[in-house]
Amino acid sequence: MKKLFVAFIAILLVGTIQETKAQFSVGAGLGYASDISTIGISANVGYEIDETWQATGSYTHFLEKDDIKWSAIDFNANYNLNKIENFGELYAIGGINITTIKWDYPEFSDYGIDIPGMDYSSDGSDSDSNFGVNIGAGVKIDLSEKMFLAPEMTYTISDGSYLRIGAKLMFKI
Image (tube, rainbow, N blue to C red; front, side, top):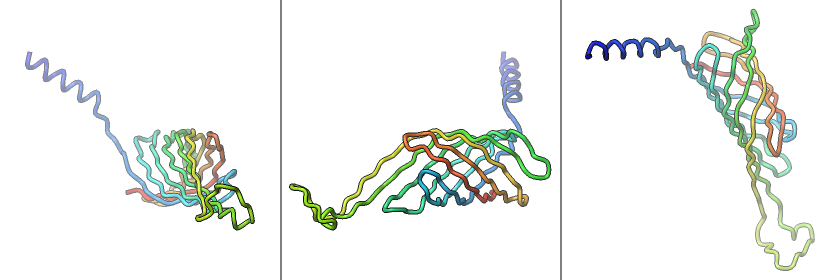
């Protein structure tokens, strides 16, 4: 019975243990968001699960425009579709997104508006968040053994949908 148990565990381990080449990468990116109409700067992290799949996360801060501040948090899965000879790897992007927006508005009294019962003692602000789904594509271009460039195009589907086009420079650690 003991030998059977040991044999079962050995078969189970051999069947489930895989040689992994998982590797982390970190980097920064720059992009443009269509309906937000401004440039975003991103901090990115990636985890290469195997030769086909990569999990990524990013935080993007969009430059303030017209007293409006945008930011986005993305969690994506990248699936390698095809290797392009002497160029890089084409991959599909799918994932989730949280986009936040905060806007400031000046005192109404600055504009000569007088609304009874309104507190004019300070400026106002408001904020909102949207949950969305990301779809897109990118290309991983190896620049060296430890560095790659990843131009991407991603469409975020949400109450405030927008298209992002940009690139990130990633370093394998």
